Length: 595
Image 1 (cartoon, rainbow, N blue to C red):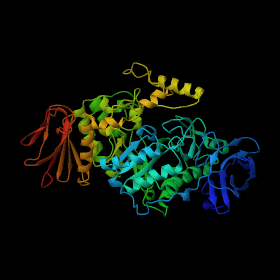
Image 2: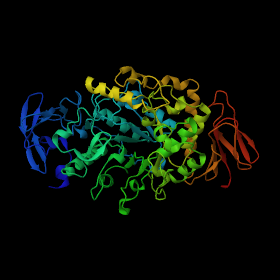
Image 3: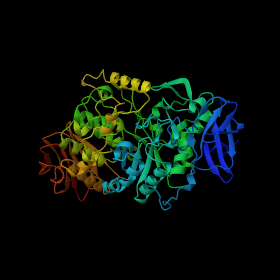
Image 4: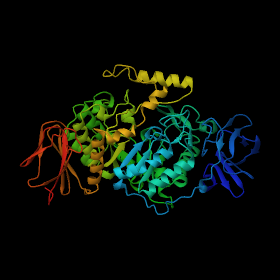
């Protein structure tokens, strides 16, 4: 049986009706059950645990489940839509029915990507795919080139970050229909923006993820924070790997997305000769349709294997999130030292310069928290393979009160930190609302069934008991008010100080387009940094009253205390070969020749 015989999985409309295909090695018999008529159609076993059956006379819109061994009835693990929720019947969707308008879309080069991470449910007042689509022109005008959606695969309840995903192939009915997601991607492409999805292949959600009823999706060979690991290298793992590979290809083919953020790849345990990530990158590279697609790992190990070519023993991914830059800036600006920030206690500009020059800071030295070496040589890693940020959903939402960096530090310092990542040679990622210093938090929320919800609430409280710097009540993830508090307030963009911050982000992203690829960072004292980018010198003061080198006769083309950004500006002063920052900030010089 060839690979094409097993793909794709799910319910596929054809001229003869609907072809149902499922991997269910734990069953001896599988039936298709049409839930609206109770009609039952036995499926044919085609080998290696796969079953299929074409049912004539039906098409898109048909609702169904699979019955295993004449007993339990479950939704399709590869369902394209769950209109009644993850426990309800699956619905047949015809992916070819949507009239795409993006034939001219050629994608975005990796080095041009400016990511904007958003959660669909709180990004807009509507909380839907349509609400995101209506605001895409705003993101385009801001300077965003890649919209990154937090996980959209369906989950239990009305709202969830998406990491409790249950129906991996089905866009959440909480956000709209599959065609609503297609329309979002279509419009983004029309506006010149790529769309990335956050996908999770390291665990399944605790409620409604019925894939494990069909096959050996878990193995006790490895343990993860969620329990037994996804089975990528134990008995029956071939079908599990195929399930996740097909999932990735289905998003690329049926939704025209441009790439993925691969969640917590450090929790993908695989001792196979070919690591799952290498197999995934090869499968994506082999696609002969559409523009170049990109794979970005979220991984805290600073592992160059992730982005090394497969021909050199790597996994062939295109990029990786770099926590080091965030953690260094967080310690330097807000003083965070607990948890993983302990590895960056007393951080300095020299450490930040090293991270910006090579992609990450830890490249094999001992981690104070673990006592073990952390990181690998960054020499094989290019700047455009590293994604940097000062906010993302984890670094905001996993704080007890969901507070953002700008809630904790003075705005001049926040403007300087923002300039650091927006003008760095790495790829910047923004988290929704940070560009206008949103007043709203982003809290951890869920809408689980009562018993599971109680456990989540208790676990959240217990998680922060050990944090000496936090005293107070943790917002209940199950309280609807926790979700509502996380909605962005779009009206505040026009009000000070938010309007000034928005202008600063927009102007910096415009300036970024003019910067050459080459870059070299230098530290000046514990809180001063210069970044040379061709004829541009970027001076960054992460504290008040700093003097930094300044090229004699250079043109001052931008600074963070301009009156359109700051309500009470205290601009830097050029003093010969130095620039004095009375308050934290950043400035950009343009010279005729690099100095």
